[in-house]
Amino acid sequence: MLQNIRVIEIGQVLAGPYASTILADLGADVVKVEKPNGGDDARHMGAAFKHGDSLHFLDINRNKASVTIDLKTPAGVEQLHKLLETADILIHNMRPGVVDTLGIDGPSVCARHPQLIYCHISGFGARGPMQMLPAFEPVAQAFSGILSINGNPEGPPARVGVSIVDVGTAMWTVIGALAALQRRSVSGKGGIVNTSLLETALGWAGPHIAGYLNEGRVPKRLGTAHPHLVPYQTFDAKDGAILIGAGNDRLFARLCKALGVPEWITDARFSGNRARLDNREELIALINERIGQQPRNVWIAKFNEAGVPCGPVNTIPEVLKDRQIAELNILQEVPDTGVTLTGLPISFDGERPKIRSLGPQLGQDNDKYLAR
Image 1: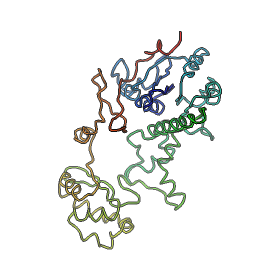
Image 2: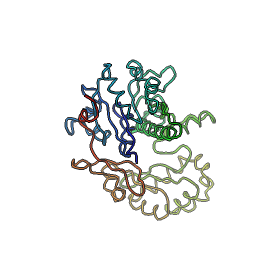
Image 3: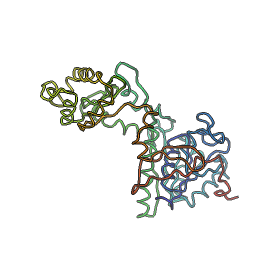
Image 4: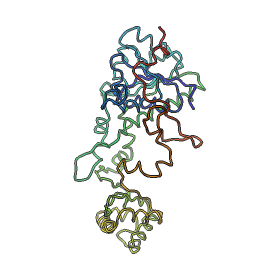
């Protein structure tokens, strides 16, 4: 897809590296620039898996080349500029202020390489009193308010279990880069794309922010439940939890029939989503009582037959055993490694982009990409 595109990445840990990994999976030639002493910090995030590097690094940096450049030296900066002469996109998530000190900030680099699309990922954004501060995933979740609305009502705030802010920022960076590529095809000029963890987190929290700004609603922690739909959460069957998503009145009617209580459809307490919101606790207790009488597979079969969206609350080992996962072919064994990773969640004409190689060894491609 992107075989004619060259990407230079100066990335650490997740947001920057994952953005260029998406482009690499799509076929771009991605050259990862790392510091000579140790490289990307993610190489050491977790136990050594292969060649002394962590599995996290080898996954998040797949399909890339690695070169080592000391950007703290004028010679190193010139080596970077040499790479940028043939590059289409630069992606970095270096600590704020560092690129200015090194002289590789967006305006300076784009003045020398006007064709380049310069993608800068920061913690708190490209302007404002916090623009120079660093941030990591949990900091962004906490500052943005996401932490405050995640978790059970009776418990403390909880971090979302996957790095949705880092991964989301990577995705926005790719979207911005591809849009800028399209603009360049018309204008002939690149430009600067800014993304940040905070802006991504605010985007995820957008509906809750809108609710507060326009209706004065302060969002609360609801566990697995939804603030605007009932029933739309997990319930405990005899042998495990099941999530039911009766997202409208039609689906609620189907749910009632599948539960064997069709009289609830016309019950004034439940005959409309707004009525169900007003009587949430009563309805949830009644559904829980019925769900708890049978194993979850019995209920899932009934709900599937009735057309009610539902699913078991699986562990990772459980979901990987499901036939649906195998049919999607999203799990890919990396050639000649015996390592299996999760591919991109996108296909083109029925084909998913291939994972061609694990993350590179530090500096393995110096001879290929760096002029001596």
